[in-house]
Length: 351
Ligand SMILES: NC(=O)c1ccc[n+]([C@@H]2O[C@H](COP(=O)([O-])OP(=O)(O)OC[C@H]3O[C@@H](n4cnc5c(N)ncnc54)[C@H](O)[C@@H]3O)[C@@H](O)[C@H]2O)c1
Image 1 (cartoon, rainbow, N blue to C red):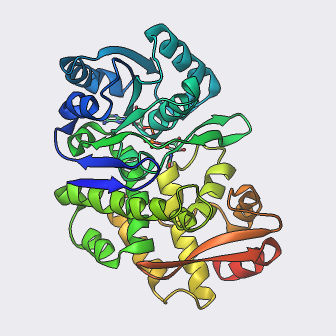
Image 2: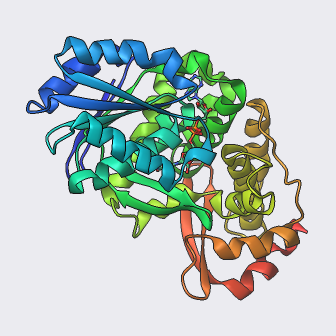
Image 3: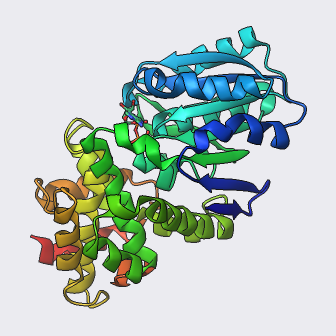
């Protein structure tokens, strides 16, 4: 299955079992002047997949250098980016060469950022290996790193030259990370596609994984094409994130992981919408039972009054207002800007 993302520049997303093996051939066609590449990966993914990806690149005639970093969000910092720049320098990457991100969202975001800034921008290929990266972070060109002051504070828009999604790589992904990605998968059903949501309810997604990945990547494609630089419609991808991020923050990023926190955030936002008469009654319960079906928590371990102060750090805040992404019903969403001072009153039904 193939999708073309019509951004500037446009690129393809290929979703196919075993497509990792195609990386050399595909890169040769896309980047005919390239000679060298740095293959960036993390300490968990490297031992599993580096060898075959490296061989596929070498078979196409590229000289391949491998750069690995310790797996995990703690590595997503400027020090790791510096180590990438040094690897790029030692490999002698020129502006016609390219980088490859082989791993989850942490690897993709950092490799993309290093590629965006090395020699003011070189191409990079995304080879996402987590569910979250396959359905979300590898598409759309948002790249970046964390600072001690906050997540993703430094970054750049830099679209990949190609996204290769091999569903088979998810076979080695630990269950907890799979569940995390499911938070985002369910989100796509909520904001855009009721039939997809219903299918997730009816049939375990592992039985039709390539189609699940395709549907999610396609929804992300449509949204990104309309709003490449995140100034409008792209905000709908943040459904569940206002309270989700707040939950992560109050637990100092060591409690619920992102996808699980977003799942709870979606339930809270649906409850808020129902109480305000915007969301169809029963929507929150439907989301809750789907989250539970996929092993995700469905109610907040933190009281709403303890979450509210943490929403002040939401990136979608502007001035004294906050942007909420609400559902009309499953599959249809809308955004509302409300004064921050009204948020507490709107949350009355969640107390
Ligand atoms: N750019 C975007 O649009 C965007 C969107 C959403 C999230 N993000 C970012 O994504 C990051 C989270 O991504 P993530 O959840 O993929 O985390 P991650 O990259 O840390 O991967 C999670 C874990 O899974 C391991 N792993 C990856 N693939 C594996 C495989 N196939 N088999 C075995 N283990 C594997 C990794 O080593 C890691 O330990 C965050 O930093 C977040 O900010 C970016």
